[in-house]
Image 1: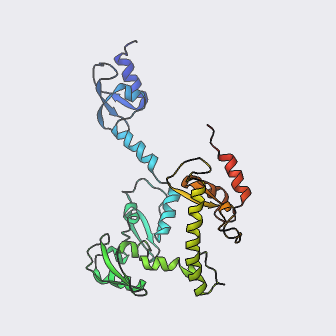
Image 2: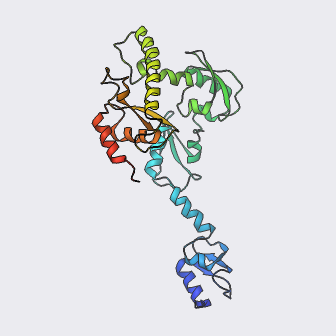
Length: 300
């Protein structure tokens, strides 16, 4: 292989964007001094890396940050979730300060993006000041009582829910700035009439009886399906592990055959998820399952 000359290395380095500073060239694997014309930094590197676009630290870190950088539209979308508005038309990095408007208090401040995403808020937000009275008052407005000493927003504190009377440990920044609730309120928000599967035609006694009956019947039916299929996935033939009993004809529309073993089949967790991702979680039919099975049978 022909050895590269000093003039060729200097010229090639300039074309890439680097200045070769040494007065000698000892081969492509020798660490020479290069100056980055873009950033002005001097670093040691081998010419083979420069020639193959394996950049020094100054350019490499910039390339990584550009690859992980969020788009301006995505930043503005996330700010609206936290009740803030990103006013500037450009974005460089999360450390720089930008004009941010608080939608709660209608005030504008300069702050870095990291400060908002970590839940610290702006100066106008009550949580920004480590004042126990302000935090206590803000929690009361949401229906909570602060029980333990408050030091900073990222430390878990004891908070009591006035509505449910339960006490939980939580971070005040999550409750106030991130619009989260305590666990008891979250469960209340997805239970009863708030649940998407709530049936207003049933009485309270019928609901309790259905829970006990279906829990026992489904457990028996599931075990019988597993034993019949020898705990083997009907799609990929995987034995054991995480498995589910799938209703071939969907549960809701087929009351008479809900607990018939012939209406059940064993699927592993990944195949079961894949099936429902294609056909949805409701109104699945036997025809859809047979089609899924034909398209998913492994080739040995």
